Image 1 (tube, rainbow, N blue to C red):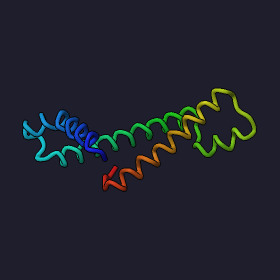
Image 2 (image 1 turned 120 degrees about the vertical axis):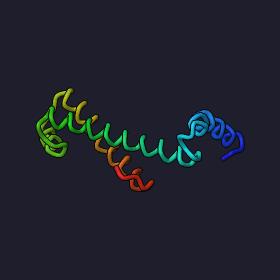
Image 3 (image 1 turned 60 degrees about the horizontal axis):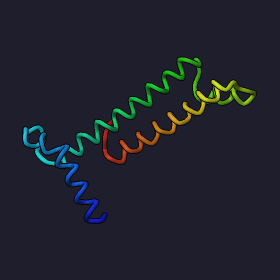
Length: 106
C-alpha cells in the first residue's frame, strides 16, 4: 500500500473511530474495526437470508426446484427473479465464508 493510501486510510479511520475512542466506547482502533466488521458481515448475512426467504415464499419452492422448473420455459419475470435469487444465493455463500475466515459467528 502506498503511503498516500495509508495516510488516507488512517485519516478515515480517525474520523470514524476517533470520537468513539474518545468517548471510551472502544479501547483501540482495532477493537472498533473488529466490531464494525462483525456487525457489517452479520448484517449482510441476514440481508441475503431474508432475500432468499422472500423468493422461497413467493415461489413456494427452493432455488434448485425453481431452476429445474424453468428448464422447460420461463416468463421474463421468472427469469429476472431467478437471476436475483441466484445472486443472493452466491452472495450469502461469500458473506458466510467471510464470517468463517474472520472468526465471526453468524
